[in-house]
Structure formats: structure tokens, C-alpha cells
Length: 119
Image (cartoon, rainbow, N blue to C red; front, side, top):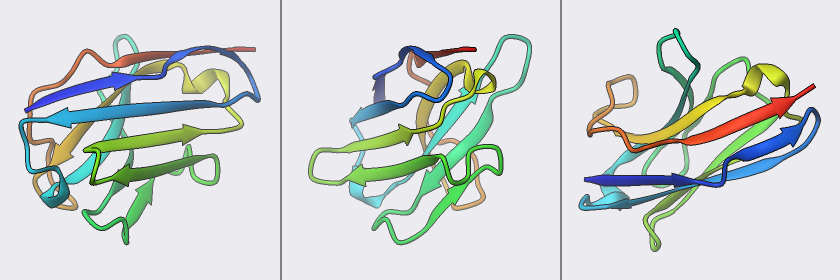
């Protein structure tokens, strides 16, 4: 599987960004998908996840009400719309497939996309 994240950048607090993840080498429409983020010296944390048919979505408390996860099975993409960004959202963002709803990431990690929120 190959996962390619894009859409990161530098934005002021209160701004918005839309991240996109394109997957290849997997049967995308059969996979749970998730977004994670990581800052230096800290473990990678789950930000949001979405079921195969988009009927189930989960958000970390820290992003609930501000971030929206979506997917397009026809394009093998999953997006993360991030609104009302805060400096604490600064991180490298990664996507991955999950082996179950409360399970672990399935594949190797992509290069991620850097999000920097200035105050």
C-alpha cells in the first residue's frame, strides 16, 4: 500500500486547511481510514477515523466540532477539513488504513504533510 498526504501548509490561527490522502495498492473501499498527527518527541495520535461507507466517524476531543473527515471511494481518497485552527494543531499529519474500528494502522506510513498554525 502507498499513502500520499498533501494539503498542509502555514496558516494563521482561526484559519482553515484541507488535507487529502490518496491511497494505492489497497482495496480502498473495504478499508477503515484514519488521520493521525505527530509532533516532535510525542507519539502519533489519532485525530479522526471513518468507516468504509462513511456512516461512522470518530473525532478526538481536541478536534471535535472543528475537523471533518470524509472519503471518496471512487477516487481512493480521504480528506480532513480543518477549520478554526489553533497553534496546538501544529503537527505532521498522516493517514492510514485501520485493521478494525478500534484497531491499529495497517500499512507503512507515508511522508505526511506538515501543518503549522501561527498565533
